[in-house]
Length: 97
Image (cartoon, rainbow, N blue to C red; front, side, top):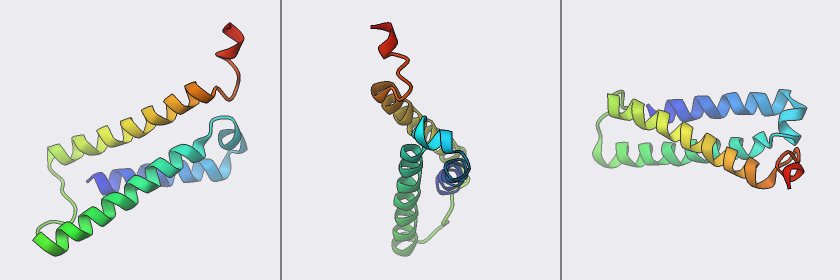
């Protein structure tokens, strides 16, 4: 399930990156895009190797897998927000100094 969720989130951020010029420049949505696509590719490779070596299900739909997929997307968004806070592209935090 984490493969589906991460790939879906990556596709949504790609669409936002493609459509919105403001999201590209101001909110650095490309960084979130790279995090999610990198995670999706890594999870896909993990699933393929696990499926070829051990067999079983390619996509898990257990409650633990669903919870893990939600946590993965939340961590990606938190990393993106941390980078936004550090870089402060709009200069909001610098105005308080």
